[in-house]
Length: 418
Length: 141
Image (tube, rainbow over the protein chains, first blue to last red):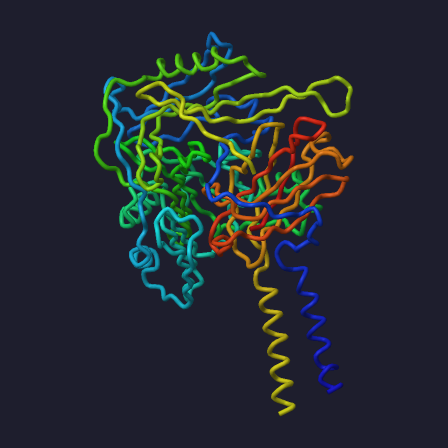
């Protein structure tokens, strides 16, 4: 028996040595960690901080990349309320603001067999799991997980699906494309650069066809970021140093190679050619919380490397129709809003877009797809510094203001608790 | 019989090594998050994909000099959220004494499956003697 232990010891030592090479190490749980009763209602927060760099960005740098069917207009003015507008406004070129329409919408439910057939063509499933979904909007819907022989993962989860070939690794780790994120480097990758294996247009068409097969309609507006390895490397090196990640857990500095070059697409759901917002809205406590539509994909030399779709809607009949707000009228309503409150700090409108927003009527499966103007506002609060010196510090927070384009009313979002 | 047991032991050690060594790095994300007094929750813009087994891990530290007071009197709540912003993990209340705060949170029932995306949310404790925190948070679902 002792001999066995003697033989086993080197293996055990080897196993122990392998441990630090794994992902983030689990640290001891604090005694302060506690579990609190969890509300079944989902909550949202549209406010998120932005970097000081974003504070200095020009409107042009925040310009959305527009495909066919969209127009843009530069707006630079100070509203009578004191709110600065420095943005590029994006809206469908064919839109008639004198006759806007709200539609009924139904949350799209993915059928796991259909998604499997569309996404895993030619690959064999070797592992399959299913479990109940927490707080599912679809009664009885299950969470399905498939792993294929080639190593791809596919999950189908009622109103969302996620596919990943897992060949590119954590390619988006240092890519920050949300306009309200800190840091933000989406503009760095909006180069328009075409990669050797496919043009952006070819990749877009391939993805659009795939989404069409899944029953997901996308707007003509999309953002295509070229994740070219030297650019990615430069951003990864910069952010690794900035975040001091060498002292932050066990994160290793990545090395990107040419075979990881890819396009990252951000698509939008479509109503009458206009995009559906990716932002959530509603008051969670009232049960009317509604997530935005998120459609993102990575296209590389192998084709579709990943595809994620959450909360797409099927557009139904007309719910309301009438004269709506054009951009100038919407800016007037925005000014009214800020005129009716005591301003707290400074406000700068950095992004403007005409979108549709899913508003729930009690059940989150049936929604009203309402036309709206979406303003991304950098709100800089002023607070006392913590050192007791009497100084102040500016605290920038990127806020999403949504105005119903038919009524001019603000579509409220409850930030809720953590 | 002894040889069989011995071979089984060897195999189990190898299985352990392979299981531990294969997920060379789990997907994670780092963002700077600000929370204000009476400001409710701030949720990360981005989400990280769950590629590993186990709990939701995070490390938080101040992102600016006065981002999180190191006197331990400034408390912050943190929790994992799903991609659609639903609460996905238990919550923890943390303070800071000068060293990065690393914790693991347990997933709520129905969350924590692989290939799903998770964000992180923070909220300022309104009883704090100050008004805001600026945190740099790294999380690995």
